[in-house]
View (cartoon, rainbow, N blue to C red):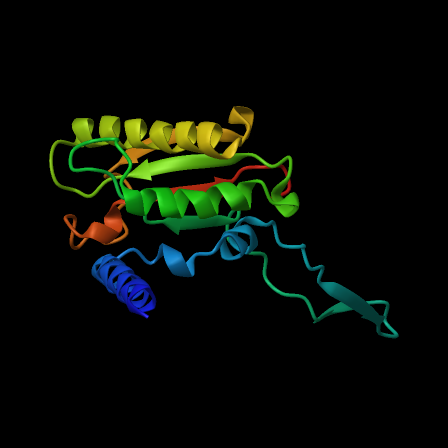
Length: 190
């Protein structure tokens, strides 16, 4: 009886200890499952616009567009919040969770044989040259982790660092949303 009670208390203590970690972490990546990542990075099938021509009696052709949708702007991409230690390219525990999902996604058969840019972005704090260098180191850290921890082939990933040059919130350069890793499918046909 006492051992069962002790086990229940241990389980409750373990669960209550885990809850603050989940609640305190602002990482939205738990919602970014590997399946969500795969869908975001999968090239969309190009929908053709069907056109019919009608000829008038004076042989003047008129076209009428039927169906179809506009082409998506640019290649498939997704922004992920990958946290690093302050002023460092060292991955945090939150980052490892995000990269586990990304590693699973990149190994998915739907993305097999495709290549990706792994782009590091920083916020606007600090020197622009330093931020670019830091974002490059962080992109390389992501690629190294994906290679060694998730067996993603290095030839499928191209690390780049853009520093603070592409802020999501240019009106608020210090905003945390500007610090991110962007994954872009650069395969032909994307």
